[in-house]
Length: 158
Image 1 (tube, rainbow, N blue to C red):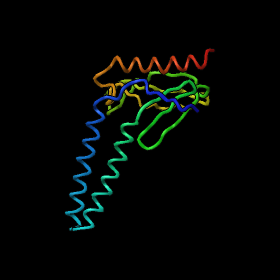
Image 2: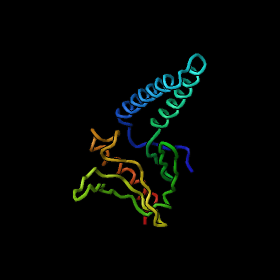
Image 3: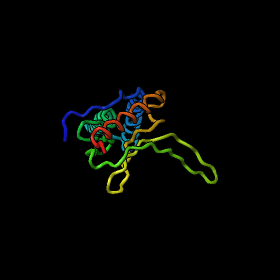
Image 4: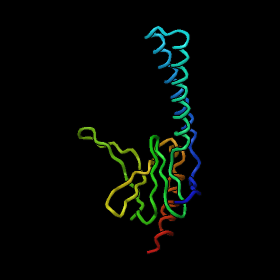
């Protein structure tokens, strides 16, 4: 696969809010752990260093999240894993309207971009119209969808 992956959008500022929130949550976890177990000295430093390392790794992954395209395929970077699909594997790129049911009510939560593979599997791209990258930029979501679709069409002219 290609080495020249390009994310067809700039990440939203909401990612920094998520990273800040995670820092606060891990600081509270560190404080609670130290208090709960009456840690002192090296124990405090070990807990602080472990949780700081978790935060740094998590923040890096949050900044790298997204969909990247190249002439060869699409790279989907999630929080815990990444997935590469060649354009030949993808039958179509489509928008999906997400609806959650709560008893008799339906709650619409925006659209997502899905990739239908030729083997029948559907792959979620993690691109969500109401997500941190597109919530305040609805036209960007549609532009990213169109760009992914045009890459797919260019790779599969049939």
